[in-house]
Image 1 (cartoon, rainbow, N blue to C red):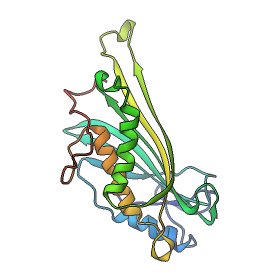
Image 2: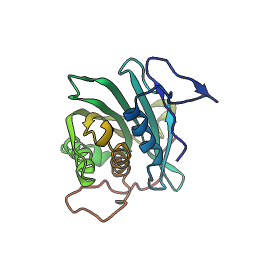
Image 3: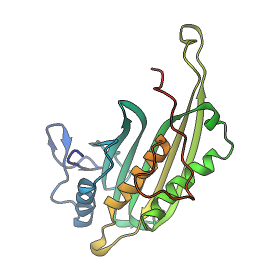
Image 4: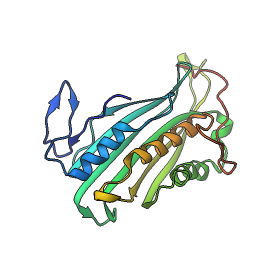
Length: 219
């Protein structure tokens, strides 16, 4: 995984070779959480890199973008943002918040399953629970969309996409920092499930996984 960088979301901080860096003046819990993200060990199909965080959501923010790539095929992608407000946030009920977006294309018959939104949300909560992570104030949406092609694009097969947007408050540990590395690993478990990859560890019979794709997606 590339070394993670970060920056204050209010625009303060320095830039180094186009990548954002965590200022030495950032609170120690935030710096510790970013270091935990940098040290996380992930499955090889997940390619992850730092990216510019959103601004004005919190005094401090750090973001990662990831893609699930298997046999040269992009199966899913997403973004994970770590927010920190040392003063606390009433809506978060804590000083940290994790915000995510995950997207993947699906087989049309899977996209038509009426229980798909509930199943996708259970993947997120199940991924956190499987790693023993406590979180508060979870919220989010699951959206599915379909595309049909016409005219010059009529040869393309219909495409369906699932999108999960969610946020939750990680439990703070010793020193006030959450176990950000474990939360990143759980998020990558979610990415893998949405992409249709087999579980990275021992299978959990209570978890429903997507079927493997039949072939590469049309460009």
